[in-house]
Image 1: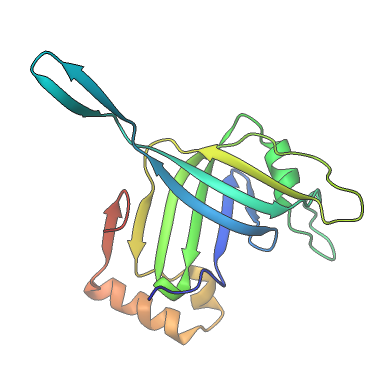
Image 2: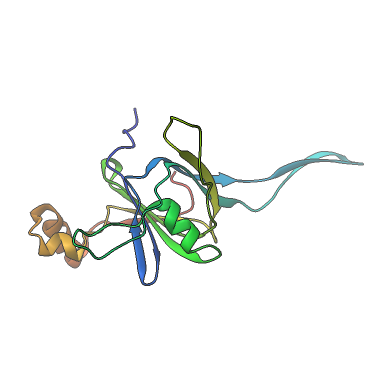
Amino acid sequence: MGNYFDDVTLTFTVAPDEADVSCDITAATLTPDTPEEIRKRLCGQRTVTGKTTWSLELEWDQNWSPPSVGPPEVVAGLSWFLQEHDGESATLVIDWPLEDTRATGTVRIKPGPFGGTAGEIAEATITLGLDGEPTYTSPIPATAAALDAGDTDAAEGQAAEDVDVDETVYEGAPA
């Protein structure tokens, strides 16, 4: 039985802009694609497997808010971020606390759709390609912000990490 994909944090960073777009997104999936082709040869049939490529598939409620320093501070909406950084590479971080796993990678940004059906929430979908494969880290590393805020669980995790925590980093898909 798996864990719910809830309370997940998804951020994009294109220096100096960082956008936590978790509250815009309704679905986020890192998807591998490994091409296979059946080749018929004189000696018989053989399946040839190509190199796996990765993509990030997103579904979200469109949010065209630009960031502002406030007050109040407004976080950039995903729709705005994608349009503003068209053609750039962004660092992707997905933290899934229920699985205590972080996925990181580099995605190629492109703009998403604008508009929708009258009287309904303007939803959007997009597939962003990754450069290389994602990296999975477990447990999720404690952040300096959590330590500064007095998050004792994060602080204990950080202290253990400083000593010699059993941290596993996976390249590619989780086993």
